Length: 435
Ligand code: DLL
Image (cartoon, rainbow, N blue to C red):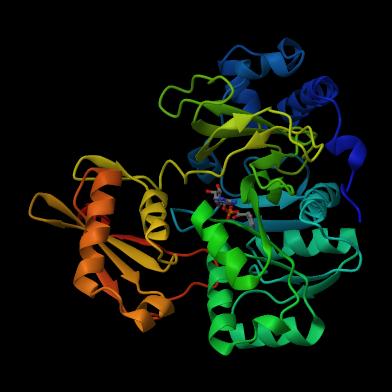
């Protein structure tokens, strides 16, 4: 079976990758300076000219781009080619403000799809596979990206899109899907339905490629058991292309960033200072091959660590840890930093699945935080503990993880709404009181 989609590039010695990055960066900075007025103005203001950039060691001289900059310049401000040379747009969901629209030339699409193809091969995909894509299609990059990657690998591609779980399961059985691509929350949702219907032995899946939202190791284990597969993480964002910016290999220990196209940095999100390898901070990307939407030093707001430690799969590209979440996912409740992923880790440790909802509110001047979590079907059946005992144990676990009291309500199975795309796990009602 094929191990790499592009062995020469994926296993290139680090010095060679860095030389390639330097060469491409020098070209790209010139290109962006000439084609994107916003960047030319910022570089002029900072007193930096393309001639000052000789390689990746000079990356720090360039200004950052933030999501607010993209919103201010909506829609065409960062366009690097005439509109007539663009063949596609994709867009973010716009849940946290105005949408960001990203443009692609045909070559940009080819690069993006190739990154997705590399991800599929890294998950064990080959020509003989049936690749079931149930990420959403349309403006969201998940469906189109993995669809294109699957074609490039030569898999039989099922462009299912999200939703309609009954139809998903029917096609999965009728057509013998072997690889599934969707959000981890939808994978768990499908897994539950398979368990309920008792059809696991009719499902031929061997691997899943899951991303677009944070998910914990506990959730991975859960999905692997429910679906009888190996579950691989894939990361990306619309602004940088879409899924496939990084992905896991068979080791499942961090995601390899496609360094021939993207240069990563980790910075301190408060000060912008570049942090040494291994430290947790905000991930920043510079695209060195994109033409239509050529972002340099784009601040993702995602927090993770990078490692160059040799991976036994043979890939030499740097790895990133699972993002803890976006810096803007972090809530400050009762003066304490709270990440939904910390809460999820406590739940999974105590045997729950990731079916929960966090509601943050305010009473007078005080914050309140409530967690609703479902009993698993086994817990409901066994009834070895009362709901009150379960709630007490969760309150204790959360108190020791977060340092604050969370009001816990354990509810019946299947009472919390399921997601078909990115899961909504937090409702912060405090925003309602902001003027
Ligand atoms: O979510 C692209 C994608 C589609 C990635 C399918 C993977 C699979 P956006 O809608 O622009 O693009 O959202 C990007 O989602 O900045 C992260 O905060 C989050 N995210 C994406 N992948 C992961 C992941 C797509 N594997 C934003 N783990 C990013 C954690 C992820 N968070």
